Length: 130
Image (cartoon, one colour):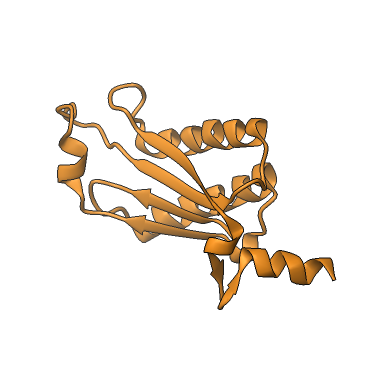
């Protein structure tokens, strides 16, 4: 049940959002073994001031991507591959290259501290073991 937040300095088209979402959901399913049906990708745009740190070069389109997953559900190599693959997807769209630091983070949340539809991931795991 990952939640992926893509933060951008300005709005992008709905078609670009749809394409990026589809690619991120696919690689999250393939690399982190997360179910596509419960993977959420949300876009936060219009935070240009946030990206002015370090004097962003003109013409660059920086981004920040964070994913929340349940602690202990993925190993280090899976997480490294997800970060590398997400960088490739995002850089393909925005061509940022090495002109500005674009961060991709994996935030691990304990299963008893989050869930969806009123059920924590911890309780969901217990129910699936019965």
